[in-house]
Structures are given as C-alpha cells and as structure tokens.
Image 1 (spheres, rainbow, N blue to C red):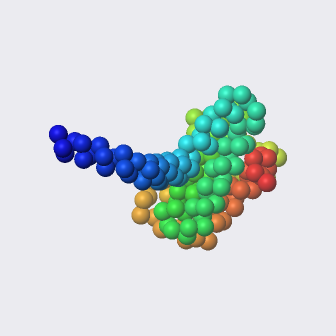
Image 2 (cartoon, rainbow, N blue to C red):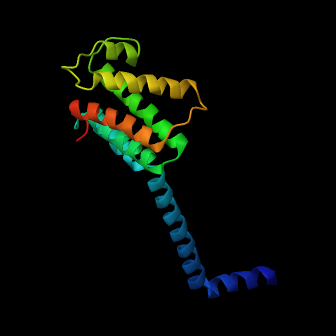
Image 3 (cartoon, one colour):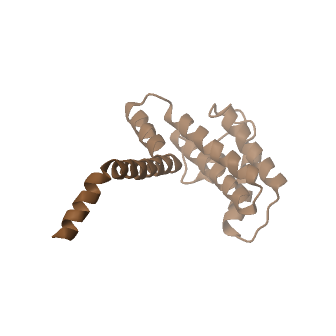
Length: 167
C-alpha cells in the first residue's frame, strides 16, 4: 500500500511537470502530423477533388499544369531515368488531352494521324518524338542525353502551348 501511496504522492507533487511533458510530446506529434500531411499532398488532393466536383476550374488545364511542373522537375534532375519518365509523361498527357478533345483513335499514334498542321503546327515533330517515346518504352537500356530530352520536351511544350494548356 505504501508503494501506491508514494506513487500517487509523486504524481500529485509533479503534476505540473507531467502536464508540461505531455504537452511537449503532443506538440511534437502534432508537428510530425502536419509535416506528413504536407509531404504527401493530402490537402491538395482533397481540395482538387472538391474543385473537380464543383467544376470551378478548367480541369484538364489545371491537371496539365500540375503534370507539366512535374515534367519540368524531372527534366532539371538530369538523371537518365527521370528524363525518360518526363518524355513518357508528356506523351501520356498529350494523349489524354487529345482524347478529351474528341480526336478518334485507340492510341496517340492514331489520334496524331487525324491532326493536320493547321490544327497543330508541329504535328510532324510530335509524331517523331512519339516514335522516340515508343523506343524509350520498348528498349529500357536505350540511353538518352539531357539535350535530347530537352528537345523532345520542347516539342511537347509547343504543342501544349498551341492547345492553350500551358503558357
């Protein structure tokens, strides 16, 4: 019984210190929670979802801008795998945009064949860079230089600008 009494006396005597320690630990956990919420873009995804539901912003343009920023980050990294992924993503975005715009076809190659130079001034370059993208996808050991990636992304950039998806 004296052990329990001593423990209770210790708790009562040091209550303020224990409250401070509890507050400090709770604060540290709160900081970690906020950090990880920001790190995984949890809030951005929720806000984007509600904006999509409400239809407040041009969805395809906003998504393209977000993806374009990611492509630019990959291009700046100068790592071969990141450069390849940047080209693959740019090609995927173009395919999605053309599909949403109503161009017929099962894949990007078929959609590109439906586009004339009047509709997209650099259509021939896009077709060439799409073929290069296909090689990147089918030949994993294919090497690519930062300059080649920049040229390819520049071609996609021009197309996105003409489609008013980026500035």
